[in-house]
Figure 1 (cartoon, one colour):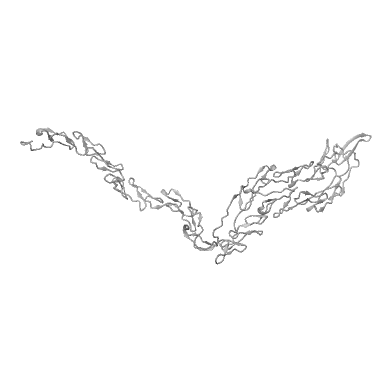
Figure 2 (figure 1 turned 45 degrees about the horizontal axis):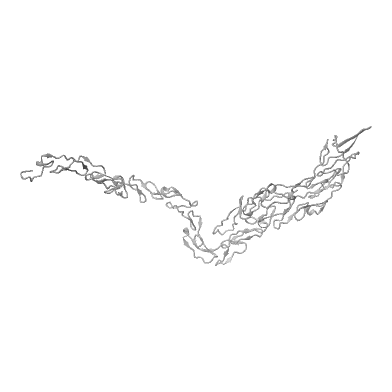
Length: 540
């Protein structure tokens, strides 16, 4: 404008002669020739009437570069969320600061970290407390002290790593492992310098000591008989001539003995090394626990006591002569007499009063019953009178009933009204006609009084009950033993008969751990050998 058109339009006007008013708002400037608005940062539109949306600047054409959730204003400046700082919110709050603009301060001590947003202290593993100033309680470790230690009782663990603070001479996550040979000290980290296999390194001090079973200045001498262990200072506790292991003190039992110290004699029915052999003795006899030789009870003879005494013999080895008279039966065990009808006394030498009138008929004596010991016939069917005598009414005469009386009661047997005389069964160990035959059943099994057939108890079988099948038990020996290592079982109950060093219902192996370096004492070696059951014999 102006006379020579050298003057620009005043602010807010444009066009020919500068007569038109600019329409720009919000600080926008217009072109003096065209009136086009140039908007300031944060505004847009023909008249700069529109504000830029978040995240844009400089005419709303550029995107903001704010990070970590920061928001920029219309000028492009980033407004950072709590916990972040920097022109683009790229940096977390420096140590000891938190919150909006990282303006607030926190104190988490030397070990904790301050949360950049909340300001709470974040403790490293092994620490706790508001300022992380406290270590984990004993028995706990790790992040937030939430893990439990696995150390042996009384042994602390590292509150950060959980590693056990092992005593000298032990290592392992739970201090359960003694130092391996050649090492000693804290966590077995040091090397020993002992020479030869007869020397051991002390796991705590590293001092060279004699290995178990040796002694002497150079540990070259073996333990003398009756001593064992490191330095040979422990006395052996083995009994009955057992051999003592020089290194451990373990007893090696001779035949016929078992137990940790070989003090237990083989149970009844077994003999030999480890009591593993079954006795072959019959009729309730025992066998020698070392040799297995049968020791027959009174009234039995033979290599396996399978034979009874001959008539008129009794006692040990059937060497004694019976004194029974008048048909009395001699007890093969003690020689006592069982007197027949009409006789009494220790030797059946004294007679009883007999009836004056006897009938010719007599009772039949079935096999398996005891007959009268006299030749007096007895009525075949005899009621009993007031005196307990059997009476047979056979005929009627001038004198009335002519009858015969006879004693038909033997050893308290009843006189039956209809069937006649009732005879008692054979005594134990006898059968057949007149009970004169010996039962031939093993292990005290009973026999049929008429036939002599053996009735086998549980755990035995065979025609004479002489077999106790190896590995079987129960009635008829039909159940199989459930013992490990081919160990035998009780032929009646099935209980396992464990050899030395084994125990439990199925013989699970147990290992006896000795102290690596015991105190110098005379304490016996400890151990236990459980016997699951004992073999039970049967007698007459």
